[in-house]
Image (cartoon, rainbow over all chains, first blue to last red; front, side):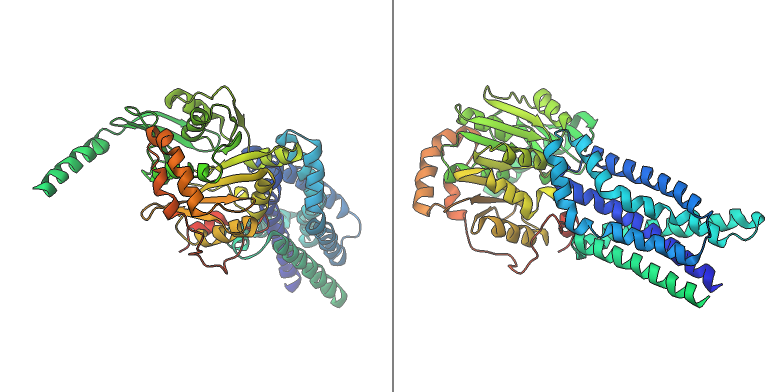
Length: 197
Length: 296
C-alpha cells in the first residue's frame, strides 16, 4: 500500500517537473529568440519528441530487473542533467544565437540543446512506474490509468504553480534549483524505501 | 449660462463618439486582435474590444498630422534631450504616428522601425495612411532579437523610442534590466531613450527601479490623469532645465501641426523618484510584468 503510494508520489513529481521546466523554457528562450508562437512551437516539439523517446527507453529499461532502486536512479540522473541549466543555459543560447539568424531554427536548436537530455530521462518515469505496479495482466489498464492520472495531474499543477506563483516569487534559476531538489528528494525516498523492503 | 453652453458642446462632442463608433476592419493576427474603429473624424486602432485609451492609437482624419493622444505627444520630448537625431530606432509601429512624424520632422534621419506583427504593418499602411519615409526601414521582428543583433553588428542610434506595449499584454522580455542594457549599448554618446510605459499599479515601482538601475537618474514625464508615463533617459548627463526650455522654444513651431505642447514639458520633467526605491528590479530571471500590473 505504502509502496504504491510512493510510486504514485514519484510519478506525480515527475509530471510536475516536466511541465514546470517546459514553461520555464519559454522564459529562458525569450531574451534570445523572442516569445513568438514559433518559440513555443519549438519548445513543445522538443518536449514531445523527448518524452516519446523517454517512454520508449523507459519501457525497454523496465524489462531488465525492474526495481524501486533503479526507478529512483532515473530521478537522480534527471536531476544531474537538469541542474547544469543554471550555469550553462545562457552561454549555450548565446552560441546558438550567434550561429543562427532565423529565430525559428535558433529556438528549435536551443530547445534541443537545453531540454532534450533531462526531458528524455523524465519521460522514462511513466512506463517504468507502470511496470513496478502491475502484478496481473487484467489489472494493467487500471494501474496504467491511475498512474497517467497522477502524473498528468502533477503536470497540471506544475504548470499552474509555475505560471501563477513561482515566476512571481522566484528567479528562473531558483525554480530550476527547486525542481532539481525535488528530483533528488524523490531519488532519496526511493532509495530509502528500497533498502527497507 | 457659460456652463450650460459648455455642457451642450461637451455633449455634442461626445455623442457622436458614442453612437457613431463603427468597426471598419477587424482581424485576428498571429499576436492579437486588431480592430479599426471609426468615431466621427477619428479612426483608431484597438487591440482589444475594450475601449481603453492604452489600447489604441488614433488618427484624426480632419487633421491627419495631429497626434490624438497625450502620451504620443509626450514621446516627442525626446527631442529636448537630443534635438537633432540622425539615426533613430522606433520599437513598436502601432498606427505609424511616431515614425511618420519623425520622418517628416527630421527628413535626413535614418529611421529603423521594428514591429513584431506583420498585420499591424499592413493595417498601418492601409487604414492609417502610414507611408515609410525614404530613409525609413520597417523590420518585422521581435524587438529584443533585433536589438541583440544590432548590438552585435555595432549599430548605434541617437534616439530610441520604445513603444512596444499595446496595453493589453506586456512582452515581458522587453521590460528587463538586460533588455535595457542592450538598448543602452545601442545609444551613441548623447543618445536618448524615450519609453512609453505604465504609470499605475505595482509595475510602476518595478519598472522605475529597473530604468534607474540601467540609466541612473532619468526624466519622468507624466500627466496627472493618464495611465501612461514617459521615461526619458540618456547614456550620459541629463540636460538642465535652461537647455530644455531653449530646445522646446526652438521646436515649438515645427511641432505645432502635430499638436505637441512641447513648451509645457520641461517644467513637468522630474528626476525625483516618486516610486518605491526598494522594489525588485525586473531581470531576465525575474520578469512577471503582467502579473505585477494586476497588483496594486
